[in-house]
Image (cartoon, rainbow over all chains, first blue to last red):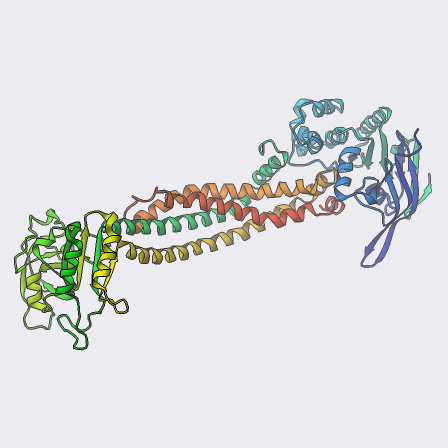
Length: 226
Length: 407
C-alpha cells in the first residue's frame, strides 16, 4: 500500500449556520481510508453520517480541517475540478437510486461516459455493465419508473461504475429494498470490492454493516469507534 | 451535432413530458411572431403599392407657383401678383424642355357639381383637349367616349362614375348649389382609375373640362395652377429640373415656382407609411414581450419541478455549463415551436390581411415584404432564449445537496 491514503480527513469540522444557532455536524473528525478498503459508517440519525458522505463525495467542503482525496486538498480545488473529480473518481449509489427520470436505463448508465468524453458511447461499455448487474437489453430500454426498486438500484450501480471510479460511495443502498433484493445488491458490492474498488457504505442496518471489513461509528459528529 | 447531444435530448423529452404547458407558452410566441410579421408585411405592402403607383408618373415634373392661391376659385388676391404659373414662365419652361419632353399646362380647383340632383364635390381640372390624351386614358366599359373635349363636354373620374352610376352621355351640372347659374355639361368619357399619383392630377374623384370652358367659368386665364412636364427619358429628369430652376427661379431667395417630381413625393409618403408600420410593429413587440414573460414563467416552473433531477445531474459530475445548456435548449425548443407555427400562420394571416386591407397581394412575396416572416421568427426564438437565461442560471447554481433533498 502506498504512503498516501486514498482518502484522508484531518481534523475536519463541518458547521451549519442555522437560524436557531450554529450546528456542528462533524466535530474534529480525523480518518484515513486506504485503497480497496470496505468500510461501513454507522450511527443514529443526526450523528453526522450524511454530512460525512457529502464530504467524502466532495459535494461539500469542510468548514475547517483538511480533506484529501488521492492526495489532493479538496478545498483548494476549483468548482470545476471538484465536478470532474465527482465524475471520474467517485461512483455514487443512493438509497433512492436517483436515476434521471427522463432517460432510459441504458442512457442513465451511458450518461457519465457522455459527461466525460463529450460524445455518445460507442465502446459498448454501458451495455456490458448493465449485463453484469443483471439488466438485460429489453429492460435497459425502459425508463426508471418502469423498473422495480431492485432493478433501479442495479442500474444505479452500473452508472456508478461506468467511469471506473476508485471509490464507491453507497448511501443506504439497501434502504429502499426488501431484504432478499438487498442482499443481492450487497453481493454485487462485495464483488466490486474484490475487483479492487474502495467501498464506503453508510447504513444503520448492522447486518448490512457486517459485509464491511471496518466499521466507523459516528455519535454527535465524532467518531466513537473505528 | 446538437441532435446527438444528450442535454438536447433531455430538453426535448422535458418539453414532450409537459407538452400542454409548453404549447401554451409557445402560443404566446406564435401570437408575437404573427403580430410582428403581418403588421410589418402590411406596412411594406402599402409602401410598395404607393411606390409603384407613384413611379408610374416618375417621368413627370410638376411645376407650380410658389404663391399659394387663397380665397374662392377665380379670386385673385390683390396683395399678390402671382397666383399661378404665368404665361412668361410657361414660355421659359417650353424653351428649356424643347424636344426633351411634353409640356402640359393645367388649371385646377375644387368645386361642387350636381348629377341628377345629387350633389358631389371634387377636383376640377382644366386642360387643353390636345394635351389630355398625353397622360390620361379612357375606360371604355362606360361607353366609347372621346378625349377630344368640346367646350361643353367633360371627362369624369372612375370613382365618381362608379358612385353616380354614370355613362357616356350623362349630364353634370357644375357649380355651387347656392349659385344661380349652374352650367350643364355632357359627359364625353370616363377616365381609367389612377390611384395615388405624383403628377398632381388625381382624377379618380375629379372631373376634367376643356381649358377654355375653365377660364370662362373661373377666370384666371394664363395663370395655370401647375405645369406638368413629361420627360422623354427619365434619366434626364434631374438635368431638366436644374435647367428649369436656373432659368425661372432667378431670385434664389424668393423662387417663382416650385419644381417637384415623384421622388420627392415618394419620400414624404414613404416616411408617413414607415411611421405607421413602426407603430404597428410596436404593438407586435408588446405581444412578444408578454410571450417572453410566459416563457420565463414556464422555464421557472420547469426548473422548480426538476430540482431533484438537477441535484442528481450536479452530484454525479455534470458541469454547471451543461445544466445551463440543457435549460437554454428547452427555451430554444419552445421558441422554435412558437416561431415555426408563427411563421406559417404569418404567411396565411399576413396574406389575408394584405389582401383585405390593400386589395392586392402583388407585392406580398417581394423580399422586403416576405422577409418579415423569417425576421419575426428569429426575433421570437431570440426572445425565448433570453427568457430562459435566468432560469437556466438558477438551475446551474443550485447546491446539489439541497437539490437532492427536495421532493
